[in-house]
Amino acid sequence: MARHNDTGKKGEELAAVWFQNRGYNIIEKNWRWKRLEVDIIAEKENRLHFIEVKCRRSQKFGSPEENVSLKKIKNLLDAAEEFLQLYPSKKRVQFDVLSITLG
Image 1: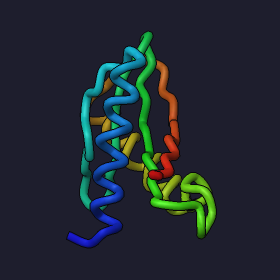
Image 2 (image 1 turned 180 degrees about the vertical axis):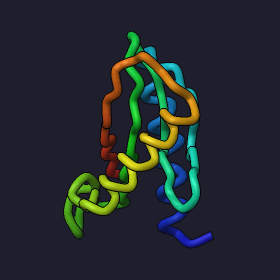
Image 3 (image 1 turned 135 degrees about the vertical axis):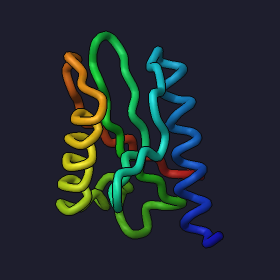
Image 4 (image 1 turned 45 degrees about the vertical axis):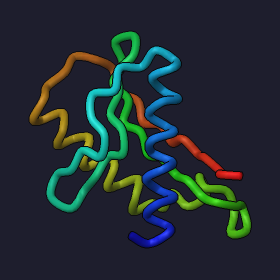
């Protein structure tokens, strides 16, 4: 596996623990629909969170969150829409980005 894939996987593992420690219930990790993916889908206090995790080893090329492109945002919205079609919910929806820089 390429190093950037290892970094992404490590970031997603850290993110899941971070959210769980703050009272979030993780519903899905790496939820896929066709070519779209949501890193983490979680719920807390009657709110459904669609979470994009961005992880980098340094900030040499900018902060991780700066790498969330408009295409990625559109894909996240499209994937969330499909998830909600498959699993209807009356919960409020929120989109989050968790940015991690590894030491």
